[in-house]
Image 1 (tube, helix red, strand yellow):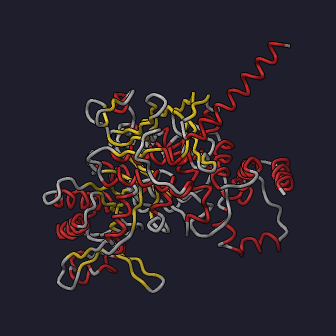
Image 2: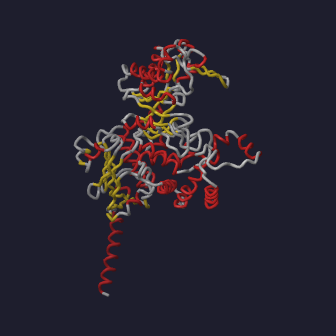
Length: 565
């Protein structure tokens, strides 16, 4: 009995001591909750996380310190953390140091100021090390966020911000003494077109770092190349670690940019060079003509003069070809690629650090081997094909020619759709589809994701966020774990139910969208009418039922939908 009373007294004393410490504003160190609980709502999931202890103290007693000489992106990282404390607790960084969060780029000796960062040498060994970061505790009253580059510091701040978002209680905050090491699987993770330019900050929150965008590029009546880019757009990218890449659009659209009016000799020769339809004419350029290099180089240097250092160059989209003798010798698309490369070489005389990536197309598909042969190692390649990359089937997207290209260490990106179809808005939250696609890209060593989301990210928040998750960490969470993280971040009252629902219905919808349901039927309703009026029985494994093997499969899918209601 005496032992029990002593134990009870010790517990009471401990609780009273804890209350006294909190009342006095002193940090209280305790055993941490499991690490999985801390990162349950963090997206993307960091690669390595260990948390043994946590510290609770008044938020007003936390000092946020940025290294001396920090650049603008590091300052933006600091703002991400500072704004969280202001939003959640109404406080700014303390001048005292009951607990300090120190962040910044570390020097060659692995130090931030006079603070040595534990394990800093690891940063040099990590993939995509310019985006890698460490979070390390130093004692029980300091947490250090360190990286080799400001981009890594920015991502460290985003991670800690997400970790802390739900840890404010009244005036207090609980901070984990976390040991986190993290880096992305893919160097570039983002989108082209649609709402991506508007959504720079939204994408950055998910550690997406690429926006490829259309902007003005034309020639005037005197044949002078003209370009323009909104500086505010570039500025937003700089402050959010998002690479802004302007596009030189499909080269068979030169007529709409004034090129053929100024230089009629660049219009492709022969009937095979022209397409007429829908009140417009498209021409393949005479890709062998030296003047084409000058025009393209003018656009590249024009873009570079605005401050960008990466340009995406789109080959012609159709199978149009110039029939002049010089173009027919090598082939239209190999010559278009050569024109872009030679234009880039001209532009580099003025901007030596300018880089380009060349976009393949459905037009070039049959001769992509010849196109790749024209591209030097310093130039990237992005795979696009309107029929093959705008596809949501459960089939691999990167075919052997490109898989081998990337395996040799060459820079390869891809433009996949992240939605049911590029032609329509249709609801779809399918973690299985996105994980399948992103894991393929990572395992096949792609460098860049340029997803396509029509018309707006907000309509496909789940799938786009899933792409951010698995392009950063392809082999971390499974499908349900991601769905739970997403539902947790969205603030749903029953996140487990949301996760179960997404995992349950994802494959059922995939069986339809993966069979190109939208293109075959919604955009060709007559085909449905014929099927119904003829009372023809659908064939399993074909058409609408391409991915549904038999009647039992169909019945299972139907029952899943019933169960989900």
